[in-house]
Image (cartoon, rainbow, N blue to C red; front, top):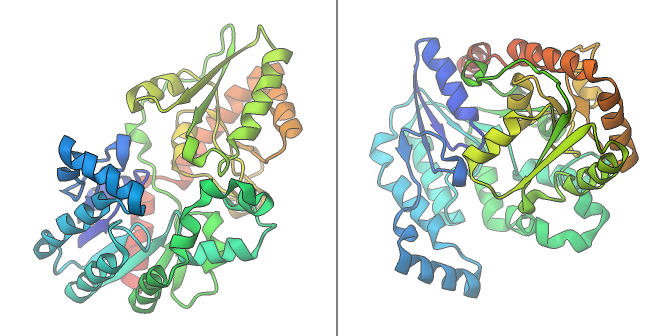
Length: 379
């Protein structure tokens, strides 16, 4: 089967591609670099002209005056000039409903070209999209990345994307895709409530993880337990980093000789991974029901991850023992959970081993690739 995967955020499409190749298919990826992560792609639409020094000055000036980034226009133009290569695929899959990340009108034009030139088109509900955003805004008690903003509108500068995703031009993209696609696939439990009643909803397919590529060593605890927190200022409140930081301050005072805390912010990816690999416990996010890609990769390395693991998650996967720690926006709760692990280091080892087994069983990239093939063939 000839397959085109459009867009990449977290390595989802790369792991899926690796699984599809193992099953004898011919997948290609078209995407941009996604910043420092620089995920592999077969067809790059990354901006290069806008990186030139003199062009970048112009780019920054235009952005300050109009809040418009001309690099997004370059993404679209590079995709446009590759359109002749994006024809006659058996299946095209979008990473979400705005996979090219160009201007909204140009995005819709390019998406229409993909629909007209290929047999089947599917879309993932993954990241921010119109359907999930509308649902979460209307369900303020639901655990979601919007919850901090819904509880405190002074955090609005961290949620400046909301009006854009609810705009008339964006909704045109959403409406066109949902009307014409062959199916909508959700990638974890955080998106399922918003989509499950839609006529194009197919099923939840967990993230594919190619754990064979994740080099790891079994957890060994010698003198200190190492806790890792990676800070992204853009998603600081959305992920509940403020709660983790407050909890860590208490842990430092409570266990000065038992823990080492590593915090990073805006460091190169290679350095980030090296520091993260040293840790026993990783603090991920506090406003989700399920795990995202970063958490799952850490779990595959036998880290104990504080992330989404609500009752919906344990029931869905029929779990009777913890494979990660459910994180919630409550400092006292986080301190208690961290204290238990510090005082019972054998639990860190046990949870880490279960985490690895869970990823191998439920997120096996070859098994997940087959699930995608089944959905594509049935719809």
